[in-house]
Length: 382
Image (cartoon, rainbow, N blue to C red; front, top):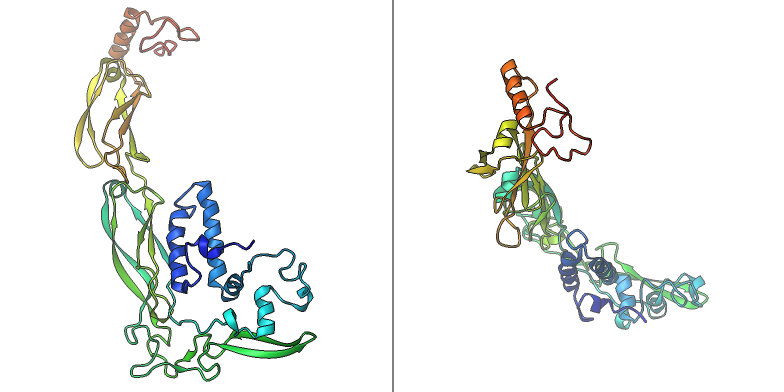
């Protein structure tokens, strides 16, 4: 049984080209693998793309409207098991064209519009960590297709208008008749003079050459929400390229690239940083002043006996959650610095401390029973 490609897109059989494109874009934005990692969404996206391909190609859509499947290559479709396979017919639509001339009943396509939807565009911008975490507004410059100011999309010179194509009499199609062993075969194809539109422009616009659009450089403000991450895209609806014939513009996608920060590292909604403490501060405890990403100051309490690699958590000091309230955490990684150069007095004091703590003998291989500050070191002062 043939697939209901109209149903896949949620459309009725009388849907226009614009309706088909609108339905496809709406579904694709939700199901595209770049925004929806769900395997089921990927399969659904493939179905939607297949339906879009079937309904936007005039030949394939005609086969769909006649109850066939343009992608069916099994027996009875084309040359597989069809008695017409060797005659060069590609499917049910071609067979109907051959006997009824392509203009009878549902086979007629008629002229297509000169006005078509524009393409989407993509631009990448680099932002500092502060900008992606707290949000910003950036102005970007793009080279794109914009509506022609002279003809406002009509493609004609001022004071003139398109006229009906004399080759196809405005139908947008021409027919040719050939003889074969089956009799007369009538084939239909787009008119070569008007490119299937049914109209020609006798005096093209001097600015755009009948295209209805021109290339131009535009400056567009982009509001970057707080909490965006590296690789995310912001969609600006209708800011892409204007379509041929002054058609509606596509969308502009702005992809975020985050520059590395010299102090902080980001992991989703959490921020990480490293601080280095002297051995004595780690052993005795201290209060550490810390400058946050937003420039504010806070104090971090370091408990006595803090070990290398300890992670201190400052809750609510990370990045804002993009689609929820609240913020992530700031994780402070503690690095303990062991002195490498000691004068005589310092070395004497450390040796005395080692004796007082019973750490003046080599530690065991497992380190058990020597939980003090120097338990993992084999007499480091000799």
